[in-house]
Structure formats: structure tokens, C-alpha cells
Image 1 (cartoon, rainbow, N blue to C red):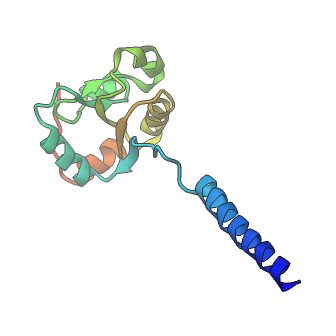
Image 2: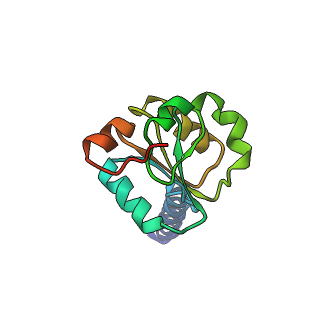
Length: 144
């Protein structure tokens, strides 16, 4: 009877090992992690990003405020796309570009950031606290 018992133990152990490998492989991390960067950064980090990306045609700073707010003061080099009309302009933007978005305090730009994320944009940064925080940090402001 012990001769019959040994093959059964072997089959049980081998089956357990195979099952563990299969289950472990299925429950592991996904093979293709999301390589997108969508996040909020403080004004000082945003300023460093602008300096680092200077001259890169794929980098765009977007002011999501109304045109009158933009004219009163904006981050140098920024373009103005009002958040109220952003979805209409989304198709003209390259999803593989690198974007830095802001508004006055962060409410409107959070919506823009999420819209860009939902539409597959690869790299989008939002300035935490918006233009108010940018000015409070003493960073440069351009005026038309």
C-alpha cells in the first residue's frame, strides 16, 4: 500500500506547484503598465519644468481661464484655451505632447486635466493652486 501512496503524493505536490504558478501568473501585475503621467505639481516644480522644456515644440503651457483673465496676467509662453471651450479645441492638440495646464485656483484646470486624461493624452501636469499660487510664489507673470 505504501507503493501506491508515493505516486499519489507526488501527483498532489506536482499539481499544487503547477496550480500555484498558474494562479500567481494570472494574479500578478499587468504586463503593460500605463506609462502616462497625469498629475498636479506645485508652482516651483512647474517653473522648473518650463525651464527644462524651453524650446521643445512638443511642450505647451495652457492657461484655461477666460480671455480677460489671461490678458490681465499669464505665465510667459502660455497659450489661452478657455476651459468652457476646451473640448472644442481638444482635437487640435497632440496627445503625445507634454502639457502644463492652469487656471486661477485649480478648479477649471482640474477639469481640463481630466478631459485630457480621458482622451488619452500622454503627459499632462496641472499647477496646484493655479495662477494664484504661481503669483504667491513670486514667479514671472506676463501682461498683454
